[in-house]
Amino acid sequence: MTEIFINEESNKKPRVYYKKSLYLVIILATIGAFMFSMISNNSFKSNIRFLQKDNIFNGYRATLDFSKTNIFSSEIGISYLRQNERQYSSKFRCTGSENDIDAWKERLCVFYNTCYNKDTNQLDYFRFLPSKPKPIFYDAAKRMLYEFSKISRDTGFVSLSTDGETPYAPVIVNETYPTKNFTKLYHVHSLMKTHFGANDIGHGLWEELGSISYSMERMNIVDRKLIIMHLNKMENTSLFRTYHQYVIPALTQNSMVEFELYMKSFNTKYVCFDSLIVGGQMTILKNPQTKENYGREALFYNWRSKIIQYNGFDPNFIPKKHHIIITNKSDSLWTHPNAKRYRAIANLEEVEKFIRYTYPNISTEVIEWHTIPFDKQIEKLLHTTILITPCGGVSLILPMLPHGAHAIVMDYYVTMPLHGFQVGQSGSLDGAFLNHISHVRIQYYQIYGPNDYQFDFPEGRNPQNDASIIINTTRLQLLIDKALEEMELEE
Image (tube, rainbow, N blue to C red; front, top):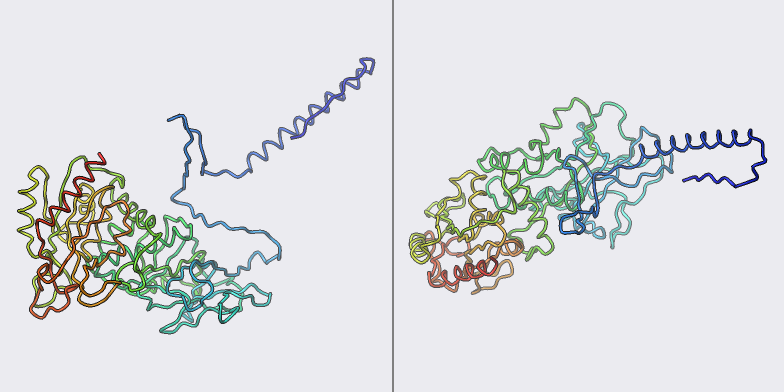
């Protein structure tokens, strides 16, 4: 700020001098006020407040007021090369191995200023012209690379599906960004392909759709008008309808679209993406490489909370009284033709009677989850303090339980080594995921031998997939009592 200094001098100076000085002061003050107004009107205004003083508790509270409609993806942009204002070049950023081009199945990337070429059916990546090519990747063995991986059955730059069998990569073109016959899409777009999700809510909810939520968090992107593009045809299953009604709106205000139909809806040769998310499809279930999900707890919890909140409930709700739910797994797409059940509780009726008799003051409910709409499932789980459930997909709704609830999940008897378990051990089918649902206490009902399970059909051989559990009520009571004691201590 400029300050005006007036030196004291003799009063013998002519009066004209003081008039001129007064005029000068007025002019400078006017200019100063005008400049201050201009600066304040053009200064950066943010709705993110840090350490805003709060009179409550006489302390400070850090507040992050993130707008749900903005995209926080601004990067440094400083003019140096005097690029033509109408010319865009593509760029990208990734997380994952940037020293091994072949580690593409876990790589997550965001591409900027790329265009889908409808004539060639490829995603065009535009080099910065007229400069010489620059490296895009630094492989430890192959050194600097100037092209993305060639797409084949076994190689790509990213994978669009959790099974790693959908390789994808843009194609670098030595052309300028289109100036005609193109459509530019400004909202964030995501391209993916489901693998198990059409028939398995566990994989669909926590891997395939969940990965979109995880990817946006990992890349620090927020856009409530995200467009999810499904690479293959969307199957018209009841589970997919559930996703569209109760899950996808937790991610975006827009419906999921089929990629091919979406591209055809634009009457231009090029369909250009301001931001395109690809890859990052996490495998968190039934993967020999994924023995645990260390560091992903917050991603799982935030995704769970988004779904609960969208469906009209409070993610932080805590019930005031105990309620026990026992899962009756009476329906599964994977049920063997000769079986009436699949991975269920074999002595369910006995277990129900025992719990009602032993804990008469606690409300108990047996539920067939497939008969209840998804939002009602969430509501019931939020009011549950103890969930007793077989393993597998039906157990993967337990992240919707409230803070401090307990889940008693059935193990299986291991007869062949898989997922880190050895023969004769008690295996936790989805333990690599459930172990990282940090707000719920997981207790595993262990299986000690053939007396603890019953094959679901005569030809059954593998207890993991072919058997239901015979629960020993004495052992079950031990786990229920432990849960009640721990929740009592927390009151």
